[in-house]
Length: 513
Image (cartoon, rainbow, N blue to C red; front, side):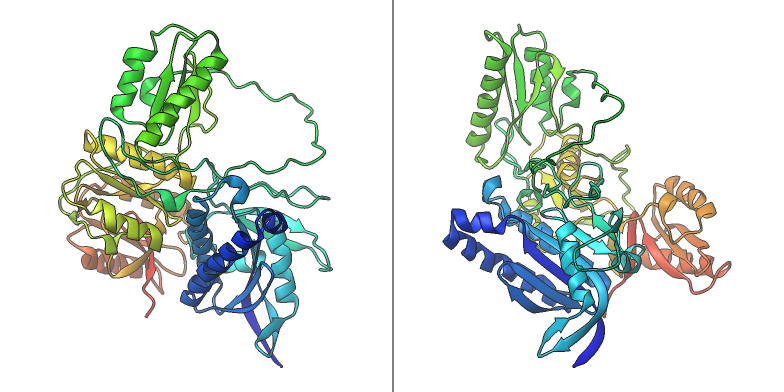
């Protein structure tokens, strides 16, 4: 027997028995296909599958960072495949991960590390990831992902509680529901309604959004809910402002203002990612709601995207849309700077996973489809719109769509055929750099670094940091190499073991050789 320390991943399918009972043949076929996705990403992360039983998958990795990256990539890729199925038939994996001491016997692994990973998987939401503190401590300062601390969890057959963290994948505010003591974690998945782009009736467009949809929050509620000592605050009705309607075109916003606002009651507006439908002068509000949804659906189907969902946005002149506004970055969203712009090439898009990169390569790079813009998120997703009435409209819609399904603000990296932010090529982009909350920088120095970088709109910037957390900053450099050299030189004046952590707006790390 060979004893070793390894990062262990355990995964299974939420509601697998029900899926099999409804359609055994189709479920087994899809399970084989989904396992192939696991196999591919696990191999890329230098891991191996050491056991499968039923719908379960057990894998080991030499690196916690690569294990977590693999888990995120798997979940994002499987969301793509689930888009082809109704919610009741979607196959959502839960993933648990830990680092532990294991014993290898005939290729299989045994021990507490395997058992704990399996119990953590039971704490994960469908489509989600739950990790132990040992994993969290290994990756928290190395990856641009957001964890939620759910505290000590007492799980079956493990004598000591496990301190666990969940990864926020696709929630609207990055939050994660903590399990309630004394009951099994909810089977509810986190997310938003599916979003996939289509061609608008007024202006044709294609948006490569299929691969980044996340599951809805439609799971069961606990049988008994705790009563709050204070009644919930009633949300004040929001008045419809056409210029605030998300996702739809500027032309559709103008139509709402010119034709809908002054139209007689009873009336309603419905929206999908790219279309609107509205009606007025109906006999009652319920009739207006149904007619608005039907109008939106017909327009969406006519645009060739029957997989896109319509939802009520307003009844009368009051907003009823449950999704809220998509998370957006602070304005200005883009500051054009000729000194750092270069021609767009799909292979150099930072952060995006394989599927979105392929879609962008196929569609966004198609010349002549102006105006267009591409947004990316730190979770590997991307969204773009093209053939828009202006670059500003393309930027706004790309950010709204990307932010909606990523659950966090995204970044515009390209407009038309140019990258509009510095794209590092000598180091690997692993996230967005925010100096004010970067834990590698000494706390008392973060605001100063953020202020210095925020005041510069030209040239290349870079930030290095030493073992003591003291930064070195290079601003307005002529190119990436000069920015790196300048940041390291500045850092070495006040700290030791300096390394570059940011180039332009991106968090970076050395490329693996």
